[in-house]
Amino acid sequence: MEKVEKLYKKFVIIIFLITFGLVGIGYIVFFKFKPEFFHPVMPYMLMYVLAITLLSHRSMLKSLTKRPAIFVNTFMMFMGIKLLSYLAFIAIVAFINKTNIISFTLSFFAVYLVYTVYETVSILKSEREFKFIPKDNKQE
Figure 1 (cartoon, rainbow, N blue to C red):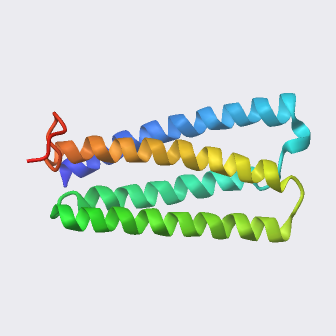
Figure 2: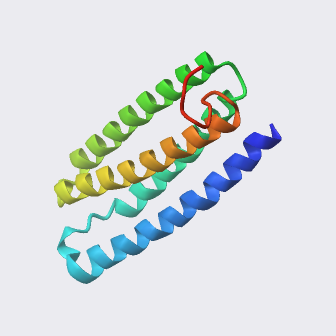
């Protein structure tokens, strides 16, 4: 479990750096260049995606200590749950406040893409540490 905690701490530090970078980009885009595209839920959207990503990543790392089949099931389950919860979040926001919903949805997609790419890369690197995938990418 010590290895899981170490990998999770590294993931948390980097995901917070990514989040600060996204906040900076969002500030520049929505307050300097295109303030009319800002949606008031955007800061909450970023916190929501960050929280879901942190929770799911921790569970996926813990599943790496078990059999590979358990990890695959956990990974697929969390990806499905996350996608459905994100779609529900977008639908609720669209139902409540339709102003700038296109820019909100595009921003949500961009944040989702950045977090998912980093999380997947991180899981693949972590998987190698647990010897699921050899370093030369050849399946045994």
